[in-house]
Length: 214
Image (cartoon, rainbow, N blue to C red; front, side, top):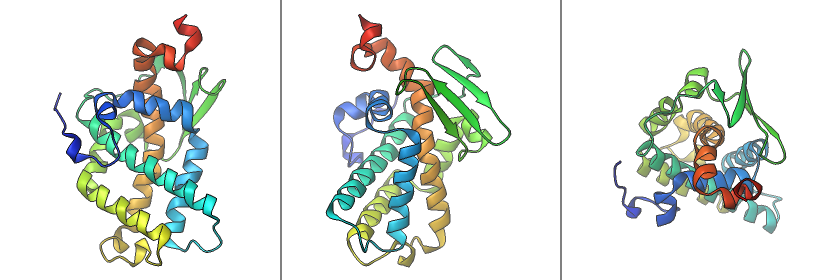
């Protein structure tokens, strides 16, 4: 395992870097559901390219929270890139039920929010089957440092008149950036269901599955 310095990161604590799967599980089990997260990130990106007129102070608070989480997910995925080698999705698992359709994969988790279907239709089949392939593409498109600079610019667009599409560094990449961040929303939940859930069940069951740990 490659040791990563905390100096590389802006949103992660030492514990997040040491225990990234716990951080992923916490977000997916305690913070929000996939469909809500997809909606929130879509709103964040739309506002960064249009304007924030009409938004209330509470809306800015929600957008800032969303920005922080998205930033964390980029950094968590970078940590996981250096800690996990096997990313292929198992067709059968004791932790979830996977059903495939022509353009969509649906995973059922009986323990998530009382039983939840997670629908994956943004990631390509190859990216879904081997998330390491997507992670490699994500950080080939932009390095961690470049993603961090982009996220800082994205934050500025929420509070000032400048827009992401007006920045010459990102104007021609706008569509690609959106698609990568859109697929990131699915990737973090796929990491939860295929990696983080088993990990926390084994090591931190009392935090997430109190009945199981009794």
